[in-house]
Length: 423
Image (cartoon, rainbow, N blue to C red; front, top):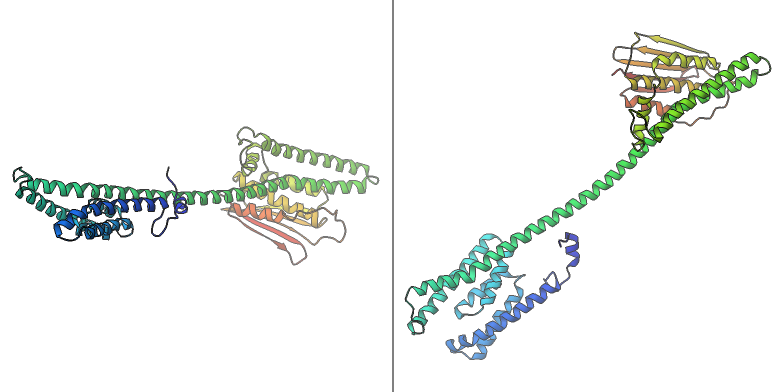
């Protein structure tokens, strides 16, 4: 089982220079075995050197115990092993020390130099010992055996720990690299997940705003006109029954139109239709689906829109400049909605004010302007305002790369202007 870098760091807690307690226990055990080995090998060394046996045993035990520091000072361990090679001591320390050195992060030239020194030292000592044994008659093999034994022993004590240590070191570095990469990927995935969540939350907010804007466009204008007609109906119900009947018919027609548009949008919200996306689609796709499914408003219906406001008692004038032509669906719908929302605001805030609607077809753009005069002191029907109409118009126009400007006029009225690229 592979652990991440943080888990590996948390698992550490050994004494002194050891990263783990079990590593410390293992090195102490190796040091003890090495000390015992060197102490035993110190007996023949003391006798051959003519010193007390106790001195040889103590010397061997001290030299062998150096193996305890192999992880912290691998170079010192190998140097001690090379130094006591002539005394035929420290075989375990030499093997383990060379393995630790090869597996360490030290430069390769240092490892190669110490490995070469140990190889040469073992080769010379083995050559001399075998030669002495043959001279003393303890070996009766031919002279060819001396170099063979020296080379075999030196390679056998040097090459395996060196190669194994290099392999383990390379594998350890690879595992650390993979662990660091896994940690980095985990952090990146976490960051991506956080960003995705933020984007999803932002998208949901944008989708809710767009659906609210679409619902506002569909309902606000017709309901505003219905309220105006209802107020007029109340005023003339007794004085002019025929006009009251006409106003009632207009209220009914506008209510049915509003219900029809609401059904189209709610139908898409519930299940989607042919050519539209499924109900599980994002909310931003729902508004687009409504445009795709339904006919949607267009500039050809602008005259009818102005006529509805005129029928509600508004003094409104429509002027069209330039050559009339067809535009993309979203361009025509946005232009229609801007005029519609502007007229709705006149009904709400300046009922009875004279209003002028201008539409200009230009070479690469279409421009529209709705300007009303100062509202009279009386005549307002007190329609509520959500405060988002101008914001919605600006968002629609800017989304198509256009320019939107609105504000009061010097005469006390209000002007809404927009320019939308034709493509």
